[in-house]
Figure 1 (cartoon, rainbow, N blue to C red):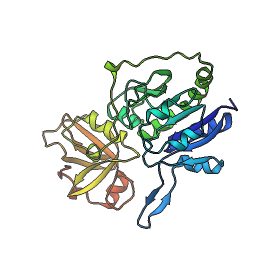
Figure 2: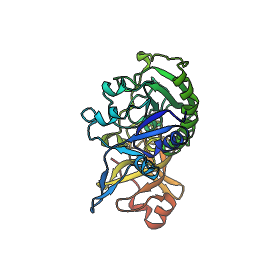
Figure 3: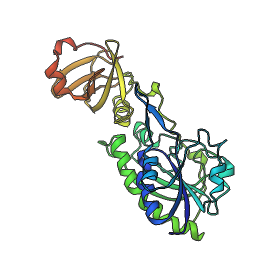
Figure 4: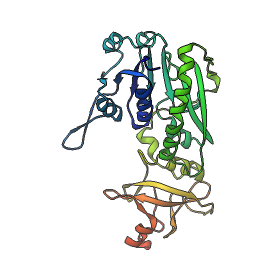
Length: 311
């Protein structure tokens, strides 16, 4: 595949091993990624992880603000194939129809489940027991194209979005590299998606980051670990946003308002839920670093927090 002219489209760190493998095995002629970001008060320019890899390998970088209007430079390169992963924009049909071997996508779910931009977060938040990677042909819809190959990954109770991200990242590269030869040879089997089985994993909104203790313990447990380590779940205590990073399902039932803190020890902060209670074991106060409940208790009086209410 050394002569295969590839354009890779992607943005986050998840894509880095995929791009690095393509650089080793193919002729990556360009990388398409999101425009640079300005970060912090000093508005320092930050490159995407994919752009950094491209620059380190002397590969052309293209950064359209809106690819539906800025695609001619991509077409002019006449790639044999375009491979995308978590790029973040809908690809126009004029690009989809251009490469000889088509446009394929590396998607972090078992399609048709979890179409959209946050499949790793939502797999945990929705309580799935497994997810995976799907290699698919792209079409004009959002992750609706024909499927080519898949690999499954089990979701454990101790998985967070970060650990699941790492599991999926490890299996994505071998699946793609094993699938590419059949795409080039035209021997792969295309499987249409069953739209009746589709679920959606839209990007996490600020509202979804909020923990509502009127939910069940399992729902809260899944949300907190599904938002760890980015962007983080939060609840409001004393009119302050408190990040909740780790918890356990406790199981004890109390006749108290959901959100009430009923116990605080070095083992955890016990909070009433709709159907029982959970034990928060790691949190973050405004302006502070993440801390274990043990460290939190050592620095605060328990009586100042008992019977207060998370909102």
